[in-house]
Length: 194
Image (spheres, rainbow, N blue to C red):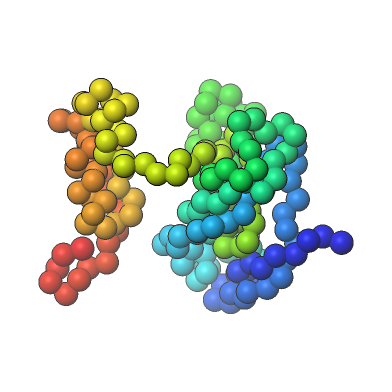
């Protein structure tokens, strides 16, 4: 009998339930992650409403997450049980023209974890080991960017949170003449600030 876990499942547009589902089984090329934190993205709201990816329901959404490695497939390299990780949610086919050129985001059968396949609003989520990245215990981020760029700063900085603090960080880590992409949408306060 499969081990069970709690997961938030969107059964159909407008209907979300907390239920017991089987813990994902992993292949030799995947890892099982015990989810510690999963953020809520605007896409999650669109999936819930049925505005986006309704054809994939029922499904567990959630794609902005981190956790610890619970189990690693036998082909997984550089990842150990107990390490903190996050994952690139993009799941290209790996064999089409674009994938072979290293342009997986252009893959015609491209899917995303937590958007087209079960995601991280659950106790566990699985992901290809090649998509997983170790998360250090702490990262003072501006100093790290300056260290790896020899004090110059990043060419491009994508702010995807939508908070004043992260916009301030973005401008402190971009190089002179660099670009800060304002992707995060903040909630407007009564005085007009974010």
